[in-house]
Amino acid sequence: MSSPARRWGLPAAALVLAVNAVGFVVAAMLIDEQTAATFFVALTVPTMVAALLAVAITVFRGNGPVTDFGLPTTLREAGAQLRAGLVWGAASVLGGLAIVVVLLALSGTTEESPLTEIGLPSGWKVAVALWVWLLAPLGEELMFRGMLWGALEKRSMSAGWTRVLGSPWVTLAITAALFAAWHGEWWRYIVLLWGGVAIGMARLRTGSVFASWTAHSMNNLLPAISVLFLPA
Image 1: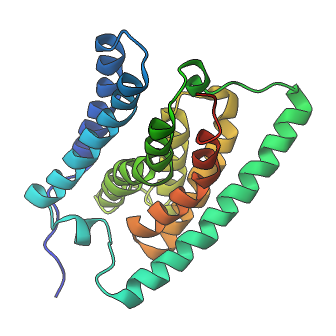
Image 2: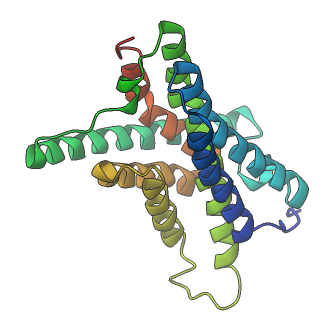
């Protein structure tokens, strides 16, 4: 028996992304003093609120996050999605490193992380590292490979869309491009774009945000570890 049609689409996805974007703007306006605690709040709260909104929308206007985001319901499903996520996460890491090497060879410059300007005590380093590794990927996957992906899938089944525009590959391309642009780090847009494609492949192959979250977390593992070695 198929699940009832969900009553959310592109407007809901746009709302979630808008809440995330506005949250970062408001956080930057309200937080003047750049301490470790205030930086952590500004870093985490906008994404957390947007992710919770995404889940709430699936609960009240859809079939719940398990169905709408393709989350596993058995250990067998979880294992298959985990393996797919690890494979595409590895592809994201290796491809990203190769692109960075090429970019460094061409430009010879890199951008410093904003974390280096604040200074983080050891406890805050662990908190930020866990956020970068696990929780930020979860929030972003609920937004991009959850809400936006699902909204584009729904739109592709509507009348008026051509066969090409309704292709899952177009959904992959749109979500990857917007995911890369969303970070606002244009000096590494190509790296983020490749990451968005590889992470999206995990979603495409499994139909699950759990797989893309696994891939995204694997992609973020090295940056998370690097946080632990930043100066205090």
